[in-house]
Image (cartoon, rainbow, N blue to C red; front, side, top):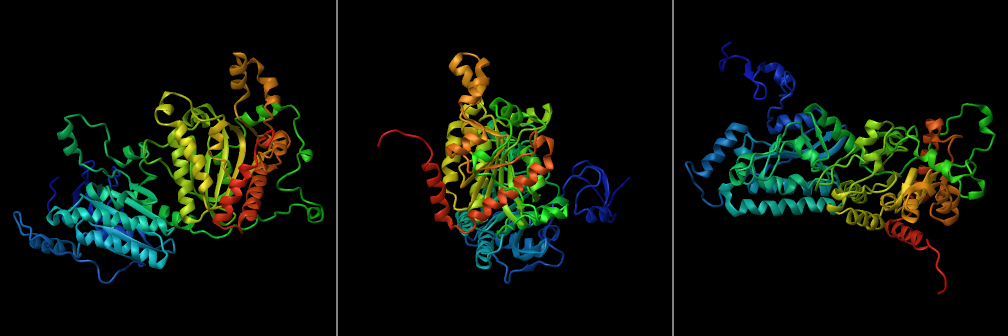
Length: 563
């Protein structure tokens, strides 16, 4: 088949299939045969991200000049004229206001067709003005990025735009405003090394190439064979550099959910569902038990350990999806990788946004292995702290679910700074100016558990355990083997009644007879009520009071003799 320029057909750059152009347009330039994402123009990009007809461009848009009188095969002024004629834009970016999921936002999109989306003075100024508009209007900022890097024709002034835009993005953080960067194909150079990677949330379009130096430059400089998929969105996601990788059709729904889940407002008390009219007159059991003598259940600690470790017990993700009406999981520590033993992201709990961070185990061997049995690596704790600090900037309460035997041991964890990562989590949580509620839902082991539990209120499920070390490890250290674990489980005082007496936990959430695994829905409903009650207790405190409350809570713990 011969395809000419007058035919309504094109060849896909991804699979070489011949594709009908109107069909490709209806799919927003995503190949129906292989899913290859063809590049979009700036206004096309905006149309895929915002509510239909809602975009209002800022007036005037920024128009750059020729500060150096630069000329190569063509004068720079001529290149600008041609680019403007080709794209209909003043420069390689358009910005303004729009709505996404009916929520207002400041939106900007770059156009690779305008001199490779390069960043000169105009692009740097437009990004900065978009940030300033977000600050003035107290709106979130969404940036859609496609760029080859700095604009050489503007020399060092182009380089300075990296500093200008980085400052502008930093101001958004200081003002507590959400920024989301959507990285598309390609995103390179000084743009990647400045505003493009400074968003609170980094989302890449499927298949996008992202990096600092281009792959050909790297290959020529190093004379090394590049890894498979090098600099692709998927490659960077595996390396912990991105929160999400999404198909083009998934970007607008994701952005809509993110905006909804990061606008703070007070939580609502849980609705009481009455199944029996007698419930209206009979006293309801408390959501949280604070008197250890009121706790019932197994009297032998080793039985509680068995219940806490039962793989049929609800995991953190089970609780999250039952307690919350929505949850967007975010990924990566921005340094090494994404640890599946730690999950986290903004969620809607009790009708209000919170940030949830949790240890995640699993119900079967496959998931337990994939999640490393809930034993988090340094990258997991760094991800956790990143999300908690984001919650602090946005004013969202933090809710954590603890369920781990401890932090991951091993050479890799030590090489990547396990102790440093845990210590930074402990210190970072102490500095948060938002309410923090932690709940031990299964096992709470050692510093790996405490790294998510430096909270204003620490709750514990009745059949959970919380300890400095597992009974087996304690026995191995003290006796040379794990055979004394049974009696040591009593000596360590790791169950809810003892921990309530010691002041380690503030309240215990009752479980169904036989444990949460016997009636997961009832257990999860009970935890929702307890968490919302704790958040309600903290709602009236300002940042300084919350930090003071958290400091004094842990300051009281411990027993010393003498003065």
